[in-house]
Length: 376
Image (cartoon, rainbow, N blue to C red; front, side, top):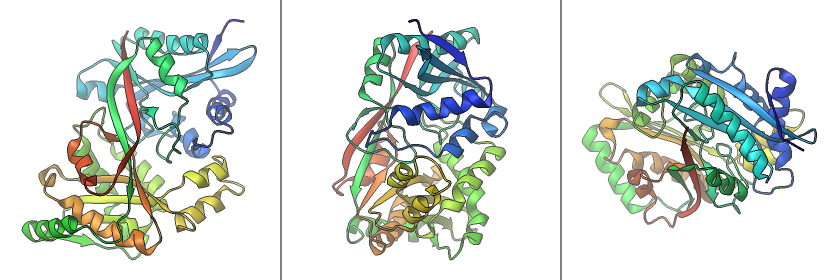
């Protein structure tokens, strides 16, 4: 039978859109479901502040009366203005291993983008740089993280068959946590701290964190502004992410670096005990029992993996060793709490400065992701 497409127009179809991904990967040991509540919030045009400068449509593919695929088509007008382009994005894409299904899904997204006057479509890319991005193209035997998406190998085959080509790659690393601070980190940290008059801020409770929370995302805007696809977060988006992330923080893995003379924020690092296994146990649901699995994972109970979520350094201080100060805080804390490995989230393959941080640490590049692009 032919493939039919339905545009998501109501809450009932949106629920099917969200749950299709979870149903498709049922039984896949490497798949980590998203928190369903957060997924709905991201896709909600009234709740997600990205819709102040984005528009999007969501599509479901049906075959024999069953849902067999989904795709979101997004236009980030702010990104297009900044990067001087007319690009649409595809995102939230999942489908069965069927060429006709893939053709119909992507053809629908491409047609919508072309009708809107776009010249290219690329992805997987979300509404912001903090959404899931990049298609897994290597490391299918490894479990995903909270901030990344798993995809079956056939996704890559179908996407390339339809004429999409590489636009950008990201690498991910698994880094054994050293038992002691490496000598080069210790030495560089002491030098940069003295040379630039920097201090490391420690936090005793989350009330202190609120003083710096917004500044972290303001600095993120500065530090990431030239990276692929990045769009400066608005004040409303910053508030949105502060409310999302700050309650989850472990203070041991929230480090800010300040300039001593005026306490200006020049760098930060955020780590989090891996929530991958907890999300699998919770099946993406916070209630009724999902919260317990997530709570135990955040406490570090039997958790050996530390996720490195975000690291940002003011462009004025990049390449000068500020990162060493952050890791000099993380390493002792990780050892004290029983973590054995750290997992980086996606790092642009061309960003040699970031990847050089793992030199000499026995890091394994265990996953790779790709953004594809196609001319319309």
